[in-house]
Image (cartoon, rainbow, N blue to C red; front, side, top):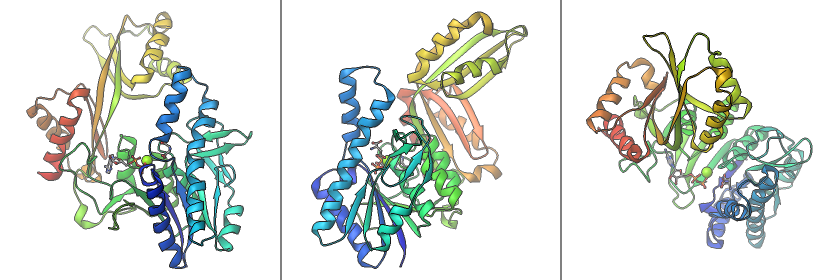
Length: 403
Ligand code: ADP
Ligand code: ASP
Ligand code: MG
């Protein structure tokens, strides 16, 4: 008898028919004699609709009340799925995040799971019950409901699988696996049979929305084998594990992209200016994440500093820097919005110099100017304008993966 955690995303539970379909998948595993924990997301676009309702009342809703609001979405799904399974004669019980013992940091809207008190789930599994847990939510030590960041139900599932010592964690979604890029955008994207934790983590962090990055982090740290598969088609999906299968030894394993990047440039920093430490500390104090940083020394000895932030933070960041201009000691500030980041990821890059060169040649051949670059051992990211993001993703994909 195996312990299996199954997770079903929003589209997979988007209607009563879809919930019945999920009940059939859960039932099939239960009938094989397995113990089952199911994690579900809010139905369809419910979370977006709740965000929009709040937006009709205020442009600056409190994060605490947003957590309270958004956590209701998953509560609808858990109860409906429990009813569907009970109607088929199974014993099933639904739990919200706090009932399931999911303890998180006290960080509203983007909390990390710190611990899961699993006694209750274990005791229900022992009596052959199917346990259904609301994804994306938990409770902080001071008793506040928290949410885990958009897409966070994946993390609930993988954290539960890790803590319960599950034999498998199956992530059921609206695609039949992890592709070499988002199949909705890159026409030639193809399904991978396996991908390593490290590559998946890079892709998820760089914008591949198929898995929440923290879910991959949990899977890697606790050696949880994940399978991403379709809730509509019975085929095998993609295994996310320690090692790659031989067939998938591509130099570049995938292309990820994300919009909403903005670049801020500070001109005319001098020896007398405060150090870079102060600039980035000031931004960090206001919780502004900085991504790519380029620092260039000019002939006259002065320096320019460019860095990227999320578009949502650009106004706050520039206002803050302008307020501190005198202390920080730069001459001018400029920002550019409407940018995107396109990244090529693959552990094969470590032993293959020349990938970056090929990326630049390919992009320039496609008439795509590169505004910034950042590299690590297993990825190269370029900043391009938003309207060239799809083209850049497709030409790089065709060059490295389908060529
Ligand atoms: P769920 O609601 O099931 O969690 P998501 O919408 O969060 O589903 O994730 C699935 C979507 O991720 C797909 O529909 C696809 O458009 C997108 N996606 C982005 N990158 C990839 C990729 N590399 N492989 C597969 N899907 C991807
Ligand atoms: N319902 C949440 C969201 O839409 C969590 C999830 O689906 O994973 O972001
Ligand atoms: Mg998701």
